[in-house]
Length: 348
Image 1 (cartoon, rainbow, N blue to C red):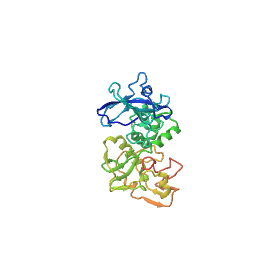
Image 2 (image 1 turned 90 degrees about the vertical axis):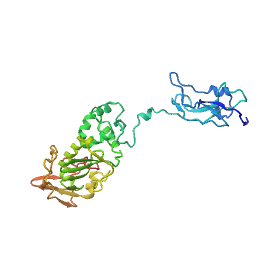
Image 3 (image 1 turned 180 degrees about the vertical axis):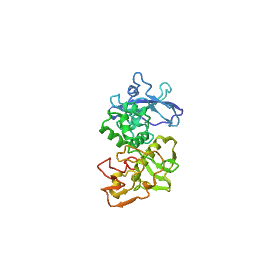
C-alpha cells in the first residue's frame, strides 16, 4: 500500500461495521471482507445510521464529517460493538484501488434508560417520578398527579405542610421503608436562592421554595429562631394559607438583606435545640392547643403572646407553665415538641 495524490474529488460512503472486524486485529483485509462485515439495520427498524453526511466528498485527502446518529444500540450483535467505516462509494471511481478506513470499536447505548432515569440530586422542577420508588406512569405517579403533585417541589411542599395527606395520597402501597427512601431522595434537592413572600396586613413571612419558614415579621416584630416556637400554632396557620395561595405569592431572588435565616439549611431542628438548649416561656398564642388539633384564623397575634417572653438559657428539659397551661420541649414526644420540624427551615 502506498500513499498517492488524487487529482479528482472522490465520493465517500460512511457505513457501520461489526466491532469484531477485522479478525485477529489484522490491518490487512480485502474489499470483500470489508463489505461482508457491514452491519445493516434489524428487520423492521430504520436505517442504522442517520444524518446528512453519510455520503461526503473527499478533496485533497480530507472529507468533513458532520453529525451522525445511530438509530439502534449495539447490544444485539455478537461483539456488542460497532465500528464506523469509510469506503469509496461503489460505482463512483474506477482508478487505482483505495483501501477502506475504519474507527476503533465502540459500544452504542440507546436513550430509553435516560428517559426514565432518576436524578441525583433531583431538581425542584423535575417531574415527581424522578424520585426513587415513584415510577413514570406508575400507580404512585398517577395518584400524585390526580392531586396536582406534579413536580419534586410540589411533593416537598406538601410533605412540609401536610405530610399525612401526602401519605394518604400515596396509599398503603407505599410502605414505610419505601417512603423513607423517597423522602430522603427528595430532600437532597437543591433549593436554590429564591424565596416567596406571603403578606397580610399585620404580618409578612418569608418561605423557601418548599414552604418552610425562613423569616417572620408580625405586628412589626421580627421573629428569630429562638422566638418562633412560642407562636407555633399561629405560624402554622400562616404557612398553610401561604401554601393554598402559593401561585400568587411574591417570588424574590436571593434573600432579603434585613432578614436572618431561622435555621441553616440542612441543620435538623433537634440538632439546633441541642446546641442552643433554650426553653421559651410565653402565653400560648390564640388558638394554640397542646394536642395540635386546632388552628387560629389569620389575624393579629394577641399582645400577651409575646410581650412577656422570657428565654432561659442552658435549660433544655423541663416544663414552662403560664396561666395554668403547661407544655415542654422534648425530643422523644412529638406531641410535646414545640418546634415544628417541618415548618421551620431545617428539616432536611
